[in-house]
Length: 355
Ligand code: ATP
Image: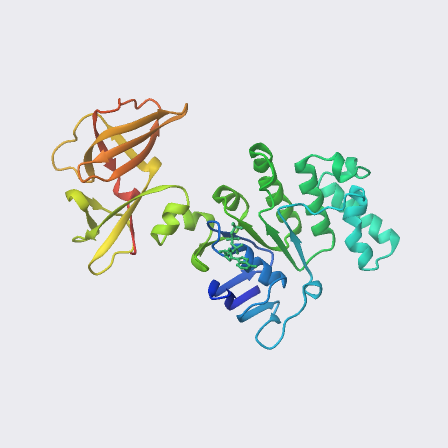
């Protein structure tokens, strides 16, 4: 059963609708990532859930109880949610222990209970040794751990995270992604996590919700979203792909511009008219020689660019139809710029997309 339910949520800023009729169900204990490009409405959706912004339409329910509707809204402090922001928003004059304990003090717990719960969460977030330090004496990653500990210690009904790792350097970000997932597995709070970083979403989420222009393009498990994108937007946004436009051919084929016919093992095929094929960069194979006559899903092209990146090479190839294809292949495949090359698009890697 759904724990957090958004029904037809709408938010306008002046004449601009930034959240458009959004429906979403989140089961108890799941971590959901709202993923999408800048400006697509992720943070606004999170703020509506937290109660920091007022919806112009639709309903939000938590555990069956309405917290936002046309009739009434529950204020943020009564929603039992914790929100973590990009800036850690720690109190500089308080120690790590005091920062984490503060939320419990506000809830008037006994001193003994405050100490034991704070110590337990400091232990889980590997901060015990730093409990007497001030935020100014911590690294960025340590400060982020403190903000996580502070959010978790109050045992929120829902945990909300807004780009929590964006201020960390690349190495720390990678470490903290796993840390957030580990803490989620330990505490199992129902969590909504906003990010524009697909690796972050794939590492942490049970469910990824891809947003575009205030709407949900697709929601599914990381595998679903990556392996079975339903739209061109999702295919391009997640994992990098080539999209070849064309028309519906017989059986499961797409007739692409320039005469290339691609057999597609998966996807959705319209009855007629325009369609497209998605092929991931690393699913394309490159050969110097023409294949035997009669083989399918081959096309010749000219190498425009080739970059050696250690474990692989990154190619840009122009097909006879004028389309540019990006292919990421093993670094042993070394074909010089300007040479003719043959590309193989294995049918099982070709996915037809609804247009
Ligand atoms: P980012 O990843 O850049 O944070 P986002 O997907 O979280 O983007 P939002 O912050 O939700 O996007 O913003 C969605 C749209 O609403 C943007 O076009 C933004 O400019 C606009 N917007 C957000 N807050 C306000 C506001 N208070 N007043 C007017 N427009 C706003």
